[in-house]
Image (cartoon, rainbow, N blue to C red; front, side, top):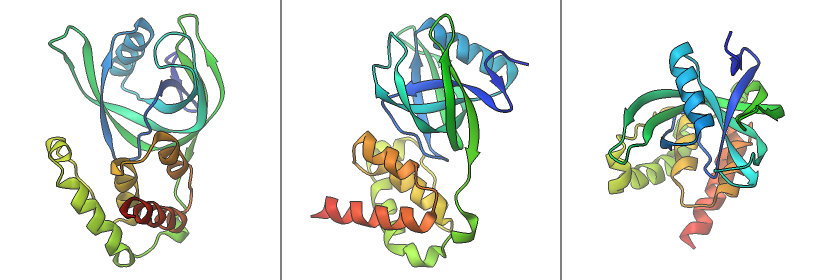
Length: 199
């Protein structure tokens, strides 16, 4: 079993970015601890957890993080023209992280618990056509089109996650959206945010 991964423990990748389930993110890897992480993940075929930094920086000393993040898989990798190692990750599901600790090289690991949206409260997608329209509008942006962004418009949770990823709001606001367990609540919060942005 990997020193970085088990059924209830995973390596952590603290970022100043929030990543929602079903969404992808390109990363440039240059620190030795993260090169080790990526090499181990590719060799042993497992992922890691992306989590938002609450205090500290992405580079250097071990930062403090929030407790809710997303478990991600590496879906592509390449050597970049600048000489750095590039990977693309895709978030699978939300997780709660507890008892984080740092290894000798500063790479963090933590105990993880998978968080699912409240299935009993998943609403009919026909009731969120306004959110679907906003998502389709955002998808027309050239940068988003470039990413081959795909959303399942018939899935309320997927629409909410993709919209949360694309809305032009700060990381703390995105983190608050990620921490919501209830789809109805997430829909209400998104409507509030969209109304505020339109004003």
